[in-house]
Image 1: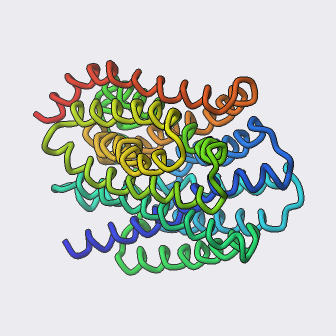
Image 2: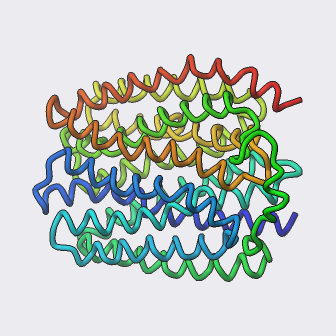
Length: 392
């Protein structure tokens, strides 16, 4: 059990660092828009490139881990992400910035499938859903702390200095991950191919294809609406009278709620069930986004923690459910498929909503975001039979 907790702690630290990198972008978008004279569509493309690169490397990371082990890939990816952000600090134009985010996103593509696999494997005998909920909670701590810290540092260090400082933290984290996993003797041995090749169902290890498809579709909608909302929330708040520093505080409120939501909803799903928990969180998310549009700045800020609970809580339930539908020997590649679909959708959504924002304004785009969330509710019905079969 001590070893399992140590692996979970290492995965949580990695998640903290990577989610910190991903979500400082939301603070930087208004700064970059002003400095480089960007349209909403160009801002959306920045997020699309980062998330798209992350999505593109999920499956390769899962497959490579079966041959090389998770430890080296996880450390190398963390270092690549940090180096991408260091390079971004030296850019002088939009295209160069896109290239840096492409490199950083590819590096970050290793984190979700490999960390989730490590945690799932050491908690296979019990407590897996709660452990994965804790793992997801740690990512939201990174979302709380890092964007707020960068937002407060920008007035003194400039965005380049603030981002570079955090990137150094990422390089240190890469070394720590490699050493910690080596000390724990995990993540270095490949999956035995003769055993893996005998997995039933499919070469991707999916036991229930229909259930996996339903779960993935909910993930696609949830991820795309969440990323679309977070990308353009700063612009909505600025239009209501917020400053860049206050935007950092606002994001901290959202992610603080999200951190609590991911941890609490992972535990709640163990008691209420996956389907009921997803219905509650998704309904609250859609309603909260639509309400936010109508509120002035101060009440809107007050709403953000509660909205964050619902906004991010669903993902913890979905991640923990993947392992119920796949074979343990192919968990890395199954998680990779799942994350590819979700992150791929979240990569495309900022560009789509950016075009809508340029055409009809940010409020229209966020109205569509809030409305789309409700589509997930009827989709939960398709999970009833697969989850009942997995429980047997």
